[in-house]
Amino acid sequence: MLVHQSSLTGKLDTSYANITLSLSSSGNFAVAGDTSKIQAGSFGTYSEDASMINFTDITINKRTPNTSKKHLNGSFNYTYGNSTLKMTLVADTLFYNYNLTSY
Image (cartoon, rainbow, N blue to C red; front, side, top):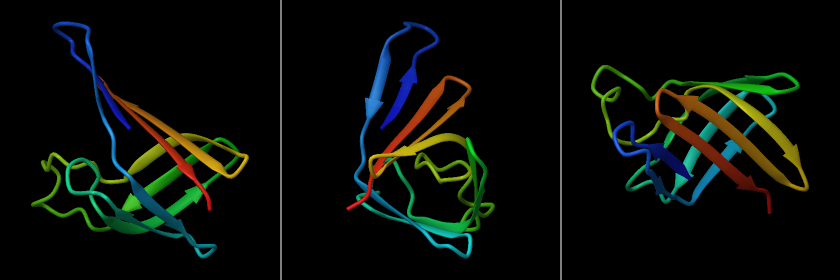
């Protein structure tokens, strides 16, 4: 879910996407799924500690930084419990909230 708060009106705009995040024990990740509108399919490397997970998306190039789709890149606060990974990133006026459930 992406939540954007307008700096002019204060109203929240939300968008949703069903995605799959695969994390390998070797430190690689891949994003796939329903990414046609807001979440870019991508891959790269990740590292984590007790509260932060950092993604380095290697699919970003000089043509993609200004895309309207979000690439999984940067440092996120996270929690994991009951087979659910929750990641949050606040950037400018955008709030990125990922609730990923393991099956």
